[in-house]
Image (tube, rainbow, N blue to C red; front, side, top):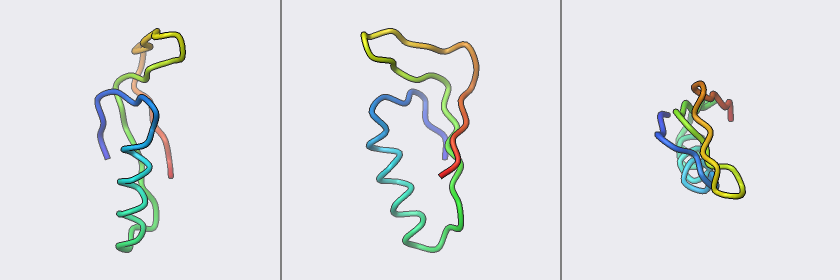
Length: 51
């Protein structure tokens, strides 16, 4: 799954739940940036998450 910016993770969590419910063994999330607390956006490198 590809996302542009990861903020709270709620959208990614929902998508992962649906994909796993429908048979996915694992889901990898690739995003370009993530929002940090305090409003600072970090985008030095792509971020990968396995779910």
